[in-house]
Each structure stands twice: as C-alpha cells, then as structure tokens.
Length: 474
Image 1 (cartoon, rainbow, N blue to C red):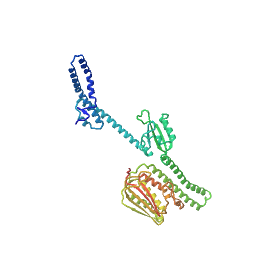
Image 2 (cartoon, helix red, strand yellow):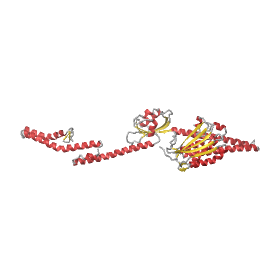
Image 3 (cartoon, one colour):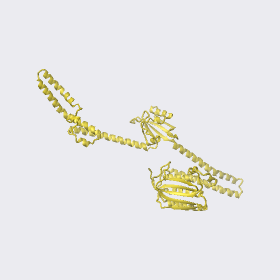
Image 4 (cartoon, rainbow, N blue to C red):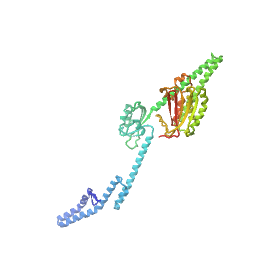
C-alpha cells in the first residue's frame, strides 16, 4: 500500500533529492567548464550531467531506503509495536544487522527501566509499611514522596506541596531552613501539629541525606507520635497512684489495730478477736489486689502474642459455674447454664477461665437476692468492631452472662472497665472488690482479638463476650 508521503519507499521530506544534487555538483561543474571552453559539446555535457544525476540517485536510493526503514523501525518500536512484526518488513541484510544492534540496546535499556520501576515500587512499599509518618523533600521544601502513615496523618495528597504550607510552626520552619541551607545536618524538635482539634504532639526529626544520594531528594522529615507515649505515662502514673491508694487504706487499718493490740487492747481478748478478724479481711483484700495487679501485668506483657491452645468453652463454663455454685447459694442465687453446641476455639485456657470467673463472680456479688444468673453460648458470624483495636474477622462464640441487678447510669456504665473504678453505692454497701476484675477481662479479650458489650435495662444486667474461633484480620 503506497503512502502519500512517500515516493519509491522514500519519505518526500527526507531531503533525498537535495543529497543527489549536492553529490552531483562537483562533476556537473566539470561538465559545465568543458562545455564553456568548447571541449565538450553542450548536448553531450547536458546528457552526461543527467546521466550522473540518474546514477547518483540509483547509488543513494538503497542507502536512503535503509535509513527510512531504520527510522520507521525506531519510531514504531518506541510506540510499542512488537519486534517480530517490524522485522518482517526489513529487507536489506546490513539494515537487519543494524536493527539487531538497536534491539539489543533497546532490550538493555528496557530491562534497566523495568529494574528501576521495580526498585521504586519496592522502596515505596517498604516506606508504606513503616508505622511512623515519613516525608521526602527537595531543596525548596517541596514534597517529593511520603509513606502511607504520612498521607493518613495529613489526610492529603502530599506530592508537590510545600511542606511549610502544611506545618507553619515557626520553630519547625527555622529547623527546616537550617537543614536545607546546609547549616545543620540534623534537627529535632517537639511541637503540636495543627492538623485536627486535638493538636497532637509530635517529635520531629529533619535529616539531610548523605552527599552520595542521587535524585532530587535532599532531606527526610520523620514524625514520632508523642500522644501515645504521654497517654501511656499518664496511665502508668494513675496506675501507681491508684495502687498506692488502694494499698494504703488496708495497711493503715492493720497498722492502727497492731498499735491498739500492743497498748490499750493488750489484755482485751474480745477486742483482740474482733481486731484480728478485721486485720485478716484487710490482709485478704491486699493479697487479692496484689494478685490482680500481677495478673494484669502478665496479661499486658503478652497482649501482642496470640494464644495457640484448643479450648472448649462449654467445659470451662461448667467448671467455673460448679466452683461458684456454693457462693451463689449463700446469696440465694441460682446459676443456670444455657449452653448450645459450639466448636472449639483457639484461646488461652487459663485466661478464658479468668474471664468467666471474674464476670460470674461480679454477677454473684451484685445480683438481687432470689434471682437467677444465666450463662448462654452461641455461634455468631462476626464480632462487633472496636474503635481502639482490630478484631478478628472470623466467626465467633458469643457468651452472655445475665443477672438481675439495680440499674446503673450510662455515665457509670461506660466506666465499669476502668482500673480501680467501683460504684459508690457498692462501696456504701461494703461489697468487697479491687476494681480490677473487669479491666483484666477486657485486656484478655483484646489479646484474643475479641470484643465485649455491656447492656443494662431496668433491673437486668448483661455482659456479652465475643471470642473468635480463629485469628483472621483484614
């Protein structure tokens, strides 16, 4: 099929005619001189020149055709046409040899480009796995790259945005300029970022890349969330303060009675018996408190380690119910198990026993006399989401422990799982407790990637526990 832009396979705009004329000029000049001096007749000179043009055109045509083929080949190759299809149109051996060299070079640079793309994607994937936000900037502080944590933090497409427009804190700008101007290689500061209502506090490190680093990136800005650290420190301070407070009261009581027994009640047997009983109660309370504190610490140490034991929940519920049956009878309560056929789960047997024991013990403590405590198990398709941690996406077993109890206000209900928190009315009724039972329960549930719900309607209280059958997350 002929192309309108080609003549005999040669592009009309290729300059072929001009090259033929230029190549013919030296000989044409000789013919002209010979004709002027009558050495050669004019008609022979003209014929000779025309013949020269013809032979030069014949001589240059294969070369021009090959050049045209190479040009077309490179053009089509750059547009993605397959090499086999292009090579089928090549005729000259020399052109094929040259094309083969071009193919080798094309393959070499294609492989290099693919390797570079793979490395870029790999580097981006590695950056996205880092938990702390990271931003890469050029010498004018424009953002060239960022990881997933940074994009989530600033909730924005960060590329090509000037970092100072996002963080306009004067201390940060000063530190950034020091690094970008080469005055300092590393700068660190702690500031509150104005990115939401809470204005979270971050420790920021600005580091200049080493001199041998290639590309436009000159510095890396990393962010470390101090809010988590501050919250953890606050929790630790509160924990120590609360534990000290809870231990101080029984210790003061015991110390006071010891002093009384050593002085005024030294020979009073009735007072001694009464005081010793009180001291025994306080000692038991401290023992329970210390045991719960140790248990809570042990659970928190293993919070990121998934259990691996096969657990039969119904068997554990039967054992705990049987162990607490006498305590329930003493308070005129009845424990009723409504257990359905459920599969085994992967869990920590001891910790699951703690969950059932702590909740059932609470139900016995706070139930209205002459009522029934019911324990029900059933399989459910999913676990309710928790806003503080990820739960398993697998099917789960729901354990519902329900009892009759006085209505608890919404404000108090949300605080039931706080450490050392106890309702004032329970303290007034002199109901003993450390305030750590439900905290232990919630930490165990969290370790198992489960969840819990607390329901309180009129005189009915229900604690729902969700434990996954297996540990699957998104």
